[in-house]
Image (cartoon, rainbow, N blue to C red; front, side):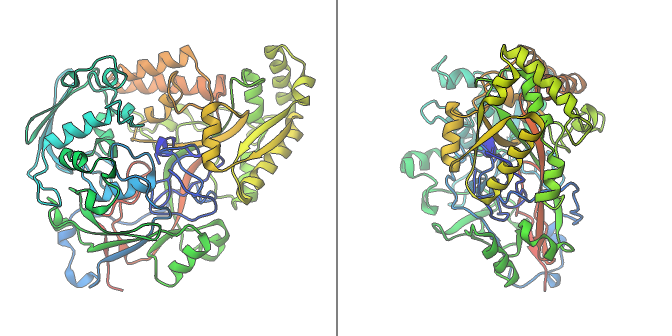
Length: 595
């Protein structure tokens, strides 16, 4: 997501799990919120409200989960099943086909039900959501979903027609959904969105009857079922959209819900309260009566609310690490953060200069100095934990470290050789490069100042170049990046589904979220190869080769960090689903023990 295109503009060590992000945004030194972490750019990106210094290397979450909540003895449960958490931000958009932020996404995931619902295993399972079963054609291009009997919160039957309407609505060029691209592999979906065809019936989504949804892809997609957890694929009610127009999903009375919870109260800027949906098809599995979301940005206030029992879990800001070190759980996240130079800028077109920029920053040292050594440094692009083949992760196959920096053996002589090569590639002298003052676009606040100052120092010491720091609000930074009005900046990306492709096609030519302006015909060829095969090894190996071009041969981006988060949670809060991607705080099966 550029955060929701899940990206967050800047050096982020975002707080990921329940609180923050493919996401969306947030602001500066806040703690973790109950939203997914995103990136430093925009949309499903992580935003500035994410607690930046909140990453660590190991997942220490050892909680045991169960989806069989009906087997839990009532005498073990608290009489009051109310979960109190912090949302951190006012949810900007609860329309599933228009939303791009993780704050809204966490509420959408709790109140709507797609064809699938991922549990703590992260494995797609038949019967987990609205689809009780499905069949896939031999050529891998046609999916036939059999839907269960279910109702919306207002008693109206939930049918396959709600999915057909929602998916076709997502590709309506008049709606201009930023996530229409998620449906591009459906037959004629991209063509319809781009105005190349006008007959909606040619799009490969058909409600055969109330309980049968037929989906035709233009080519096989091994990740298709996993994508269905993304809220763009959730159902919408045609009658409510047409009745309320632009007001749809803006207030509780302008929406309906087919998921575990409903929005029973929404005090804008202050509180959102969810209540158990009595019409939910699996309501017996839902033990919580309510989820009370506070909307608090300031990290000290959040910690104070946790200490006084007003919140049941929070992300731990860096200034409180020592105080809570023995209680903190470490949760892995599905985000990567990177610095980059605008390839269209004066010196950005040189691969050697781009390599020198990354090689000259010791992010390991920065983590130790500014994040107490708890920020996992990235030496590749696709984050750990994303699957590969033969039981190995993508990182295990591609390698953990695929480029050098001053922290991993690079010398000043190596950097100087790259500067020589950069001068030759650009047709200038090294003095021309070193006499130029580079504009580094970053955010406002102490966090950004501290990191920008370290970059200034390291780039001056190791490359001999000067940086002018340009601070701006998140909104302004996004605008400047979209326009290309910058030289250096940083961003992040949170995956939209559990496959390396959600990270790799970000830099394919034509992707609107690629703010680097870099493109490569060889890279595009490998991405297309991966998209057009169902052979796991062939497609993963193609992406491994593409990643090497991206960050080893060309250094189009400078990966510097993976996301993880520090969670502080009451021991009596159980069964919240926290996955690195897609579901960061699922509450369907959550419950409160006696305490």
